[in-house]
Length: 220
Image (cartoon, rainbow, N blue to C red; front, side):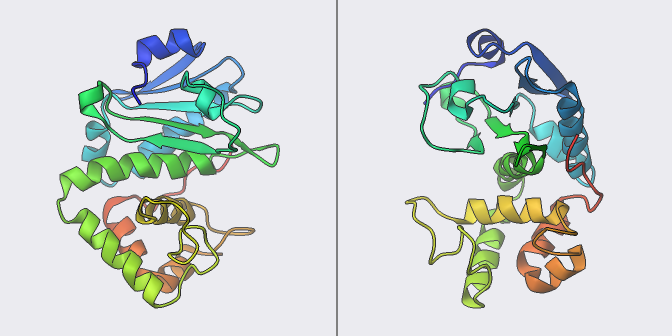
């Protein structure tokens, strides 16, 4: 489905705040805390700092921050949905007139959280890196297949035995693992990044090849 371009979106979804990051735009309603915009910008710049060419390839992308009480689908100008989406990735559809649009909530359990934003941004990174490196998707699929053969991630929604959608779970494997790459420590899946690397070297080697190991904001 076609979504409006940035200028149209600012009118249709009542966007009154936006922050440019290079040639990308972070948008949101008046309900979105200003600090969330700057946290999102820092996340984008940090994650892409190892391979700055990723940032340039994200030109024209829009990232919508969703405040508590707002709707993911509503923010895109669509009909309201009863689904409890925390985020949504609309990958590039050049034939429909937009490069990419991504939306995410910025709170979790009533506390500021940028975890969903990191996950959705990982989808954006995937969409451009797969074009930069024709072997990227093959490497990602091999990492996923190996992880499944070893019985890793058995309790996750993207595990092959748990996946309930017609689309491939590999995209979600990538996005969630990128989030975990930056979300280590107390109350996270892994206490340290080294523990994550030891658990699934296939995906962490791929992430480490493209993305920074620097810390990103978890809140704002």
